[in-house]
Each structure stands twice: as C-alpha cells, then as structure tokens.
Image (cartoon, rainbow, N blue to C red; front, side, top):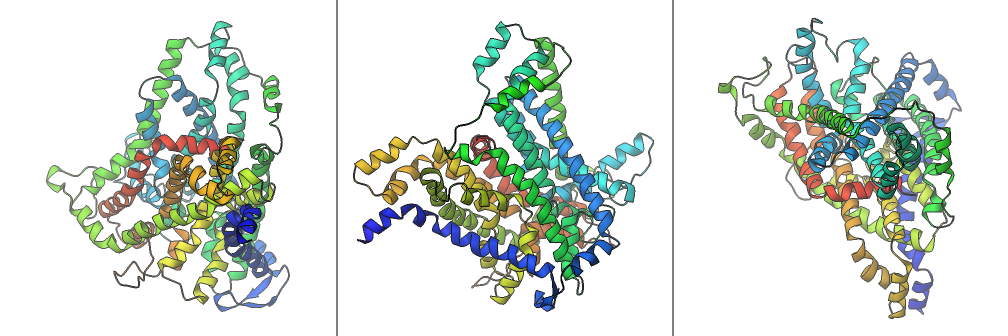
Length: 594
C-alpha cells in the first residue's frame, strides 16, 4: 500500500523539500518585509503596529534617497549598455578565431569567478592616489592626481568601471553560448551565397542569437541591481552619497535605530523594480516551451527583417586580425588587475609607497601573514561552500526532475524559482536575520548553511530542468518496464546520466556561497574560533573587506590586502579551471536554451 502511494505521488515527494524550503526561506521573508515596511519597527525589528505609508513618505523626504535613486538608474543604464556591447563584440570575436580559444576564454572569464569583495579590493589598489597604476598613467598624461574614489564627480563612474570589469565576462559567456549554437551549415551556406559581413550579421547571426541576447540583457539588468559588495569595499564600509545605490542605501539605514522603517520601505521599492524585471525575464525564457507544454515559436526568425544595417564587407584576413586585436586588448584588461595585485602582494615593506617595489623588498611575507590572520575566515568559507553545494543538489536535483518530467505545478513552481533568482538578496536579509537571532544561530555556520541555498537552488533547478528535458523519455520508460519504481528510476538511472550537470550546479553553488558577503557580514560576529561545536561564521570575503574598512582614516596596507585577496581567490580559480568545459554548457542550459 505504501509503495503504491509513493508511486502515485512520486513527483510531489521529489519536489517536497524544495517547496518547504521556498516557503520558509523565501515566501516568509518577503511577506515579513512588506509588513515591516508598513509598520513601526522596534528593537530587533519587532512589530509595533501599522503606520500605513508613513515609512514610504519618510523615505521620499530623506535627503539621500533622491540622489541614491538617480545614481541607481544611471548606474544600471551604463552597466547594462557596456555589458551588452562588450559582450557581443567579445563573443563574435572569439567565435571568429580558431587558435587560442581555450586560453583566451579562461583569461576573459577570470574576473567573473572572483568574489566581488576581492574585485573591489583589487581596484581599490589600482585606483589608489599616487601609487595606483591608473592614477600614475593619468599623471603621465598630464591630468595630475585624479583621486578616482575620493572625487565625488568620479565616484559613480569609478564604480561603473569596476562593476563592468567583473560583469562583462558573464554576459560574454551567455552570448557566446548563443553564437556557438548557430549551425555551421548556415555559415557555410552564407559563404556559398556570397553574403557580405553585414548581411551575415543581419540575416543569420542576430536572428539566431536573439534569444541569448535578450536573456543576457535581462540578466545584466538583474545583476546590476544587486551590487553591494564592491561599494562597501571602495567606500571602506562608510556611506558615500556620490556612489550609493538603492541596495547599499537600504543596508546602511537598516541597522540605524529610528531608520529601520525607511530601510524596509526602500527594500520594497527595490523588490517592486526587480519584480517588473523578473516578469520580463520569466516571459522571455519561455517556461512553457522549456517544459514541453508548448511548441517553440518561430517569431524570433522573422525579427531579422526589422534589423537595418549599412551594407559593408570585411575581408576574411582583416576580420581575423580585428578579432585577435580585440581579444588581446580585452585579455590584457582582464588580466592586468591580477598581475598588479600579485606585484603589490610581493612588497614586504608594509604600506606601499612606490609604484613598483625594488628587488630587495620582494618576498612572501604578506602571504604568510594573510594566511595566519585569515585562517579562521578561510576555514568557514571552505566548510560552508561545499555543504551548501550538497544541500543545493539534494533539494534541486529531485525537484527539477519532477518539474521537467511530470510538469509538477505547471510553470508556477519553476517561475517562482526564477523570480527568487531575479530579486536582490537584501529582500530576505532583515526577516532572516531576526529569525536566526531568535533561534540563537547568529555567528554560526548553520545559519549560513541554511540561508545560502536561497541564492543557489533557483539557478540549480533551472539548469537541471534543461538537462533533464534533453534526456529521452524512453530512458525512464525502459526503467519502469524493467520493474523499477519512478523514484528508483530517478535515483539509479537518471541521476548518473546527469552527473556533468551536477558538476555545473556544484560549481555555481560553491562560487555563489563562497563569494557571498552581505549575509556573512551581518550574521557573523567573529571568524571561526577553532572550537567545537564551531562558532564564528565570518567568511573569507569578510576578511578581505575588513582589510579595507579598517584602513579608513589610516594608511591601508595594500600589499597585505593584495595577498589576502589572492589567497581568498585561489579555491574558486582552481575549481573553475577544472570545470571550465562544463560552464558554458551549463550557462546554455541554464540561461539561454528555451
């Protein structure tokens, strides 16, 4: 009897852990955030009665809100525009060449895998007055000391530069996945027909990559509203109205007594904006087509008639030369910050006072000191990240199968996953912080292990649905004929087939949890104290950020900061190098393929 019941409700059983997790850790925090934004908030965000829209009125009248909102709109527009233009150019250039693709791809994607805190720290060094290479270059060009991060007029442009350095690789890989999906036969046919460069782009390339391009645009838009870590680092933990964005504004006010209601109102405004973007994103990726509930439309192909371009033709050898030139410049821009961080980290004199250290001042002292000081932080990250990956796979793998094979929930369950992925993490921060505090889990590994899957499960589910959908249904049917139950067929037959997909999910889960900063900063109080039961949950990203924020008002030890950033980056660099061949495939299934 139990076996028949389990067989009948196999799909529900497979998805049950996901449903419970999403209800507790996403639905509850969002409802709580809305309530708090309409309430008088007490100590530890206690509900002290409704006040209607008073918090929103106070928010609008706040002297910093208008500038922060304008900053956010300018920032988002600039970042998305640069991401899309650069991503398209790089994808087309890489597709044009035949030699060196692997190494160039590795170099170009390297900024993407770094924790954003490390990116902020590296660029803090590069943009440092007098001793930073960017300031040095500007002075040689006759502009004098620029003060990139200290100048109010340059604070926002500097943030944009730093952000796009890290965000372009992700958009580039998404568009590249679309470019590489173009059938070679179409390109050969274009050559035979004598189509010009502009005609190939108009008639073949853009119509074929338009789904990837549209999704990339929305992903760039989504990611641009999440920026927090970099601002915290370059502002050294303070609040600078010149480059503050809505997310940072909300966080900064969230822990100031008397301003929590304003912070919650700002968080809801961010949520509303993100919801609109998420609706476009969910509509664009085509959930019904992805789940096989509707045949894919040919509408995209007809859009090529509406593209208007001047006619031009670039000879093959010249286009190849242009592609290599673009990629070499891009590779240099991608790698130079790493190189400069390495050079700076080898300076043994402490506070860097010269552009390049003399040979007598070169050594590994900073790395030894960084490992000694950061050991507790690193242990927390190296323990938490793999555990989060395991939790993510245990919850997402069976649920994605139930969604892909049995269409559980129609498109609703999958749409909720995508919605959670699309909204900024600060939406969940305050309710989960109070929940963790009430449970006595502040400053523990368990808190982050429970919370971090919010950021990993949605993308993991989405990626795995794509992989499961590519497995012929005959595989499942053959297993059932052989006498296996539906649950047995999944665990013994299907899971082994999708091991490469599980590797992709593990990579993105480890990368996301290892790089997370906001929750580690808020919930943590100390690094791991090497005790048992373990206490102290400040992670490696907090260690790097502390190295900058503690320098506020004092000279920053840029050499030690560089060493710390490089050490923190080593684990994700190794993992990404090992799993590189799966990453583009994972992005294709996870973000582009419909």
